[in-house]
Image 1: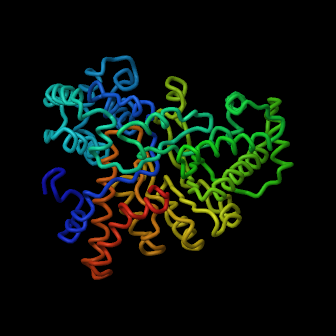
Image 2 (image 1 turned 180 degrees about the vertical axis):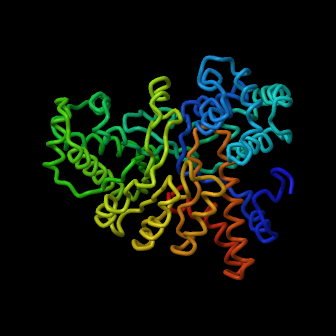
Image 3 (image 1 turned 30 degrees about the vertical axis):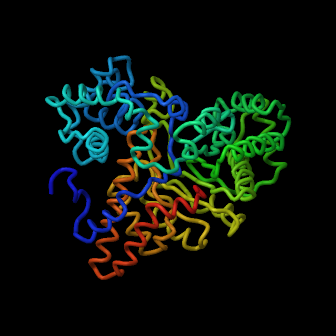
Length: 456
């Protein structure tokens, strides 16, 4: 088997056949971090560094591990110099999915078969720079070329969504939707929470005296997102605090924080639980999907946070993060009346969450292994376990979770190949008939996310 050949990640003829049946299906990407303004303006990438590495924390972290200095990653160095540094270090990244994703992008989007190294760097730079200037390589054109039928960006309640509105008059009309992500309104423990609440007040032209005023503002923005074709909320939390808390207790915490008084951990947890439940009520009323991305421990490397700011590659997961006890009260409150998708970062949580989704029936389901868990091995192990405990048909489907347009196709390709390989092996072991395997992979690659999220 050659590098990234037709049998890439496919260990048998059955897997090959299953993948061939789904490889050309349109992409439904229900969660990503698209730069919607860049899409609306239909920008071109200036060079391969900008397209592949300027916003990709996976690339930064891998190159840091190989000793590439920060000035050649996030610093002011010329992009060509950054690309050369990447190319010189890239052969050392074999075995990491980032090596595969970037090469898949080169192969699928540019027709480049060469591997990235010191000797090929200049030729790849020149060839891709010329290609990226062509009309067919604008960001909107790339979305269409990759077969993206529907995609959901990640948007703050204070966002005007003007760029989403602009896209409705573009060739991507009907393709890109916003997602309601109120993390900053809920994060009462953060130093900038009071400033953010002020921004939300300005957004709704109001003044928040009590927690009910904050909830009312979130409802206004939630309604506005619905008017702009939103179908889901998303919540990035370390611990999914879903305890049932009275309005009076949440209000007491809210008022103390507004006066810049210190809150106890219990008060913070109570407030966050209350807001999470209130947004879930809004979602249930509209028939939206409620997504929980759980377990990210942010900014553990202090030097990165100080020098570069938050969310620049210093995030990890913790096997000890508690998910079941804080989440279960919310699941019980919304039992059978809210579509919930749970994404987990640490593979050690797969067992607990697969068992939990099994206990709650059809409306509580797992998303594909997330972030540092979304590699071939992470997805493979998750799929194998879900198939033995829960129903694979209920998996929510693949999401790219990506900040770069170029990777939507490669991320989904890796998932489809991994899925075909896992299911194909089950067929070869006599665990399922081929006709149902074909139905399963088609369902998970296309029909399931489209139907679940209402992306029609």
